[in-house]
Image 1 (cartoon, rainbow, N blue to C red):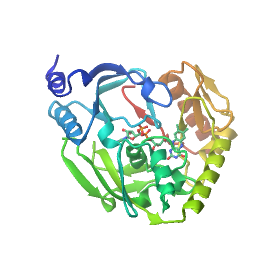
Image 2 (cartoon, rainbow, N blue to C red; image 1 turned 135 degrees about the vertical axis):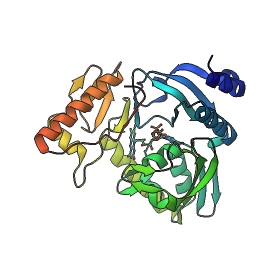
Image 3 (tube, rainbow, N blue to C red; image 1 turned 90 degrees about the horizontal axis):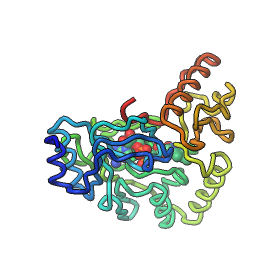
Image 4 (tube, rainbow, N blue to C red; image 1 turned 30 degrees about the horizontal axis):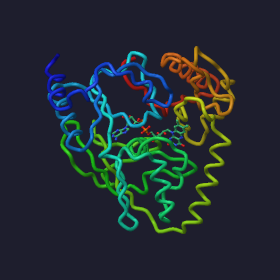
Length: 300
Ligand SMILES: Cc1cc2nc3c(=O)[nH]c(=O)nc-3n(C[C@H](O)[C@H](O)[C@H](O)COP(=O)(O)OP(=O)(O)OC[C@H]3O[C@@H](n4cnc5c(N)ncnc54)[C@H](O)[C@@H]3O)c2cc1C
C-alpha cells in the first residue's frame, strides 16, 4: 500500500475502492477501472480526498453521472471522486435555488417548474447531475445554464472550499472555465417568477420534441460532436453517410447521426475509432473539423 492509499484508507476505510470498473457509472456502459475511487458523503470528505490527492501528487477526477464522457478501456489513473448524499439537497429561497452538485438535473428542472420558477425549462430531458451541467454549460433548444448561474460552491484541487460568484466563471458553448481541478459542490440558480401552467406546457412540448429526435433505450452519451458555428454536426455527419456506420459494437445511430450508440459490448476504442473516422470524413468532404462534445477520460 502506498502513502496515498494509506492516507485515504485511514479516512474512508472500506469505502475506498481500488480497481473499480467504471462502465456501470457511464451512460455508454463503457470504461475500464479507476485506480482508486471514493464517494464523498459531504464537503468535508470531498475536501479531505482532494487534499490527500494533492499532497501525494495523484490526479483526481470528479465523475458526475457519466452521461457526457467516454472512459478509456484502460481506465483512469489516480482518484475518481463521486459525490454522495450530502450533495443531493435542493433549497428554495424565493426565486433563488441552491442545488447540490449530485442532484439529478432533470429533478431540479421539474421541482422548479412545479414552483413556477422560470429559467431552467430548456433542461427538460438533459440527463446528468447539476455539477455536470455546470461544467458542460448544458443546454438545448436555444437555452443554456450560464444565464441563471448566481454562484458556485466547491473545492479547489488542494481541497480548499470556497464560493465563486457567477461572474467569476466564464461560459462558452458546452464549456465553462473554472479554476483548474475545481470540483463543484453546489450551484445557486437565480430564476424568475413564472406561470406554472405555462412552464409545464413548455416542458411537455420540449419532451415530445426530444423523444421524436433521439435514440431511446440504447446506451449512448448524447451528442458526440459540438455543432460548428452556424452548422449542425448531425447534418454534416448524415451528409457524409455516417448514419449506421459501425465499428465493433459501436455505431452511429440510424435515428440521429450525431449519436453513437453501444449496440452491445462496444469498447471505448470502438467508439474512438468511429469518432476518428467521422472527423476525417467530414473534414475531407466539407473542410469542417468537428470538435468532440463528449469528453475523453482516462488513459488512452
Ligand atoms: C441521451 C442524452 C441526451 C443528452 N442531451 C443533452 C442536451 O440536450 N444538452 C446538453 O448540454 N447535454 C446533453 N447530454 C450530455 C450530458 O447529459 C450533459 O453534458 C450533462 O450535463 C453531464 O452531466 P454528468 O453529471 O453526467 O457529467 P459527467 O458526464 O459525469 O461529466 C462531464 C464532465 O463534467 C465533470 N464533472 C461532473 N460533475 C462535476 C462536479 N461536481 N465538479 C466538477 N466537475 C464535474 C466531469 O469531470 C467531466 O469532465 C445528453 C446526454 C445523453 C446521454
